[in-house]
Image (cartoon, rainbow, N blue to C red; front, top):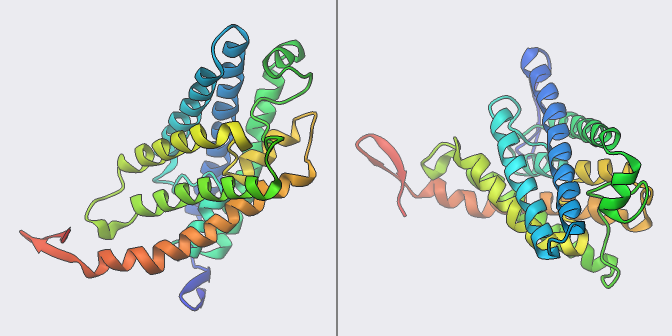
Length: 271
């Protein structure tokens, strides 16, 4: 049974069968990899910083860890579940009419579960004394997101919104078959580069959440826990999902549908 409203698929006919099971497992494992590699790179970055490397080098280190790690993980699971690994991406796909609401919700829950699993594995592998050396505080989880003391929650929300918007539009652009190319290797490369540059900008100010599952997972295992301004890491990315999905689907995507030409029998962009 397929249920649609205004072009948006709420329930599709692929809810039973092994393909959905494979997608669920892929999203759980993939998000676990994301958190383990990303937050693990934060641990390595700050350990190197404590040993004498500059703060700039630490930001570059963790940005590369997140960007390359997530790009590689997307490549692993893109043909199975789409390699979404992020509720903001899943909702962006829904708002762009590329994913049913029920699958969006199922995958988002799986991403949260996978993120917590990955953070838990990293947490038990880091002894308390090493964690204190890395973060400067006992039981502070590496990769914990928090807003810079000189920023307001509203400013933090803007950072998270903009960073996630860049990611969502990048994802939608790379999977757009009307652009005359398949996603292929371009998808993980483009997504990895987007995450890399976004972390370079956001990491010093908000910790660069841009993923509610990753932000929740890292903060659950932190001694600071979930603070009152944590809503920034939920609503910022989800608002970007809405804005990015609607903007790309209804404003940018029609350009490619109107400007296709055929050369030697193959459709190519007329730009």
